[in-house]
Image (cartoon, rainbow, N blue to C red):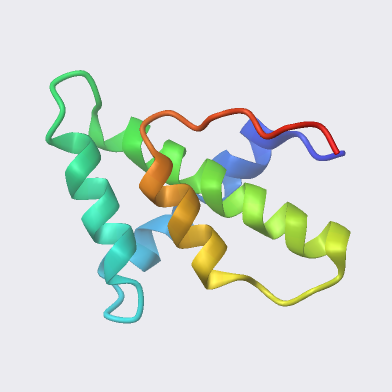
Length: 88
């Protein structure tokens, strides 16, 4: 199993690139939605997004499949709070 906080923190540069990229406008939209809340700062929003990226990256590795953009977008839509997934 991976260390989610450390992995997420290491993904912040990737999130910053996604925020600027025209290929990932949904990341910028999610960031904007999060920082519009009074209780979420930009750095915290980036970390929340990075946790979603880490989760999808980990799932991709475990399931030996390609990156699922739709799943990543679905995780982002669930922010600011992610429900716990049922045990499988």
